[in-house]
Image 1: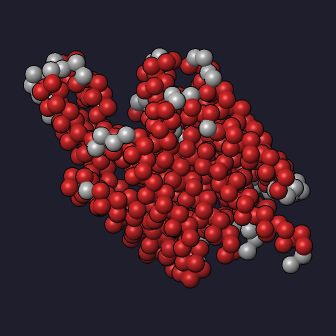
Image 2: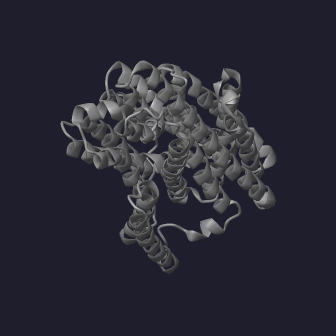
Image 3: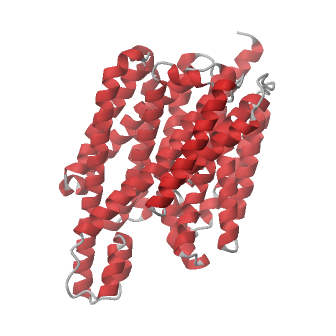
Length: 497
């Protein structure tokens, strides 16, 4: 090994920590406002529609830009795009923190999403460059996959801790110091890779962005079924035009032969399923721990840290498992472990209220999803050449963002429907209070504040019971999905190495 290569290898692991920190912030910002939103509403007073957009505009901006920015890094240099993304993300964080009104906050949240779309795929594609040896690369992928997955779960709890201490603006002020350090170290340590020889097709990038935007809007924020169907249809048309152009353009922006390789489609499906469940159930767990178990945000964060810790363990063991058993078998095992873990919250209130059983469930959830997510990401990044790694990473991160939006919508809607159907509101509760309580368990606490003590206790007990049932049903549905994924992945495991 030459001196330059040896020095590069030594720097790779500290630089991975820097890249991971940036990736963690990007993942956290997708969900950090879920808990911070009430404090924000009290200060800026946005309407109901604006509240939805404040949360949704970040992933809706990021998802369609992932493929264009990922391939842009392949063409013009990954370090350049990554550092630009860091700068944009840091400036947008300051803008969000000091936004004087809702329109300014929405604008900077959109810019924040654009910065995140530069950071995510380029960070993952850089792993091909920093860790050319497969065993080390698998370890790096495991670390980054665990960081990205648990960041989305940890976001609401971190937001709660920051709001509890300093207010909602602190959720954005956490970013700039970390981003500044990442910029300095990236400029100092990241190698300058020469621009790629492949031209960058702006029209293909626009078609891909428009198509994913339509699908993301339909999945993440369907105002009505008509709007959702129209948005999804428009997105599918644009994706169809994008695919047609890729078949006729030489070289294409995204090489579609990627999806013909063994295991790639299963890997994309694995990312979608893992992120849907991780983000969707993560938000429900955060709500359950604080509303039903009456834990503070800090105490709830301590419980959810079990997911993070288990993912860290998964990051350590997965590379050796991938080398011994292959990606598909490890992914199947990850699905199976997740099924067992989800059966704990799905089994009943006794398991949810037991610290030991719930801890085991959360630990298994983190471990199983680390195995599945890492093996899926490794399949995608290993399927392409180094000069096309940005496109493969962008496909993975697009699945990540769409999965997060899909999970929030589907599991959130399912839990809300079960909650409303099972909430036994006492007969003496006035109709306006009843309607407010039906909106959710947190709203039930607000509704109960103006009632006599005994009636308030009855309403709160009913809300907690309904909230628990919503989490149980959602976990049961997720367990069923992972059971099907385990069966399908097991049948096709012979096609993936």
